[in-house]
Image (cartoon, rainbow, N blue to C red; front, side, top):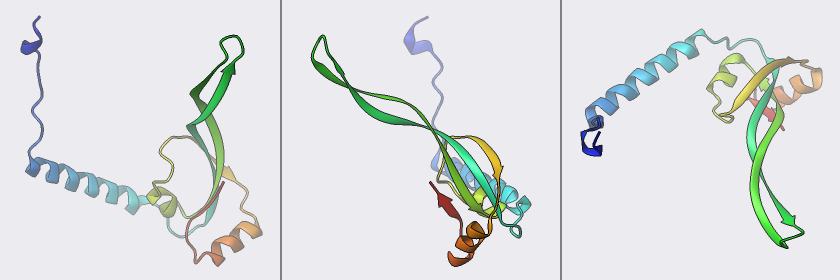
Length: 119
């Protein structure tokens, strides 16, 4: 099969892009409407990312740079709606309940009841 006979999708028109964005915002708002904004909870997010490192080959006497998978646990304190609206962590692989202590609750209150992220 020749390369020029392969199916090439046509890009969406600017009007269609605006329509897609409106549909996305409407569906996102439906999700936000279902979230609870009354109860403060503490959750621990497990996030997958990458970390850079360098290594030296003793035989070749050469330094190389590379990346490897890294996992991190982050405590997030706030309501379900606040956590849902937060787009800080794109690669969440697990969310677990965490004990909400009086210290965490005081930190939340001192932060004007805004989402707290503890690394």
